[in-house]
Every structure is written in structure tokens, then in C-alpha cells.
Length: 86
Image (cartoon, rainbow, N blue to C red):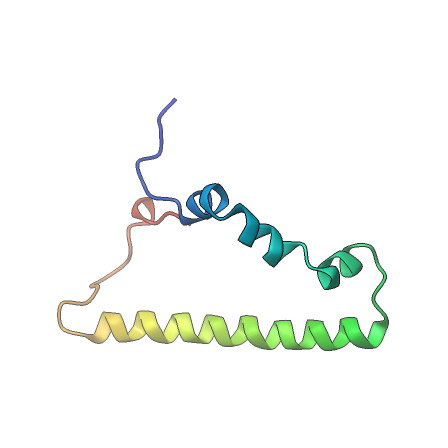
């Protein structure tokens, strides 16, 4: 079996920031959502704001990539998918 030779930020953080990971992913709010204990208005508000955040994040990432491709010495052409580790 071939071992991956790229750096995994996710694995690094899970290994070295366990307490922070638990704090970020196991809040009382998220626990209540997972257990279906949030009222509809609260859940609706959270989902609307989460959608706005994700949409803005995608726009920001697209803009960053476009700017990098336009800059001198920026990425030319397509990205080699084999070099991208998500």
C-alpha cells in the first residue's frame, strides 16, 4: 500500500488539537441540533446564516484563485488534481 506523501492539515489538527476540535464540533448548540432539540425558528436562522457563510466562502476562494492566476508568475492553465490534497 502506498503511503500518502502530502501534508494533511486535517490529520495534523486532529492529532495536535484534540481539545480545540472537540470544543468546535461538540458545542451545546450543535448537540441540540443533532438531537433534534432546536426550535424551528432557531434552526432556520442558523441554516440561513450558514448558507450565507458558505456562499461567501466560495466566492472568496474563487476570487483568490482568479487573482493568483492573473498575477505575474501565477498559476497558468489547469491545476494537476494529483497535486491537490483536500
